[in-house]
Image (cartoon, rainbow, N blue to C red; front, side, top):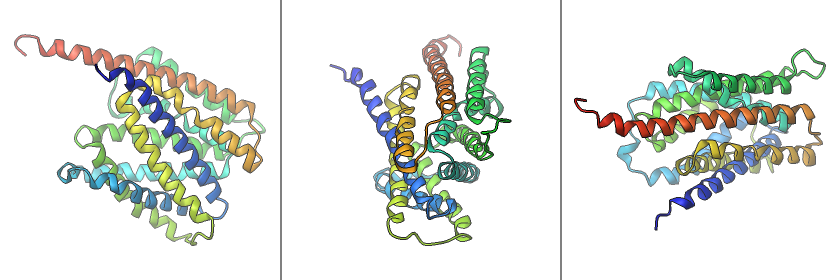
Amino acid sequence: MSAAPAHPLRAAGFMLGSTLSFGVMAIAIRLASESLHTFEIAFFRNFFGLLAVLPLLLQANRGSLRTRQLPRYFVRCAIGIGSMLAGFWAIGHLPLAQAISLSYSTPVFVTIAAVVFLHEHVRARRWAAVALGFLGVLVIVRPGSADFSAGTLIALLAAVLSGVVAIQIKQLSRIDSANTIVLYTYLFWVPMSLLPALFVWEWPVGIAWLWVVAAGIFGTGGQVLWTHALKLGEVSALTPISFMQLPLVATAGWLWFGESLDRWTVIGAAIILASNAYIAHREAVLARRAASAAPTAAAKPGE
């Protein structure tokens, strides 16, 4: 009997594990931010992340880890470092729930970046979902109101850059394997994040070591689990699970940092969730159509 029916449950389990791992990483970053600069936290997250992923990479075929796209990796990783620094700063200086909610706007910018860089054709319904996502962002940021914080723009910058990185990963994956992308990403990230950290360097003390190690391990673990989840299940079904991170970090913000959950953040996050769910649904539908059309096209005579 085929094991295929169990794949959705396994995929959901991997996605839930990934979501919780990223949530723990965010909490660890927030705790580390109490004594360390954002630049240092980013470096240690990458350094310990590389150590965590090395055992997996060592098991891979060495030939499959070669690449001819080093310039592309350099650009991808430079933009990724910018996104990481902006995102980590937001986690360390904004209410946790607000920082994480704004990070959920990344799929909106992925759609826009796909049009700009990949020349994908996006129809009216997906543009409507993008507009809905922007509405959710505006509800959270509330520009012009007394509660507006310029720091929310840094969180938004992280989401924009993350969207560009997602497109670059799509381009790299056309030639290179997932293991190759992970390997070169970390090999570039470690020295790239070390350079700015040297200007503010201060060795972690005491329990701060635990937070930076946890950020590296759980961040890498979240990436690995996320990759496995997407291999086994559909993005449209898995995307809502990723929003379980929000109640986790909101609870941590309330218990450990005395943060109250702003109703506008909740409303905005719900709007962004609806936008993401529809974008993921449309991508899954289009992918199924393309997959079903491929055999038909291949069977046409004279082609």
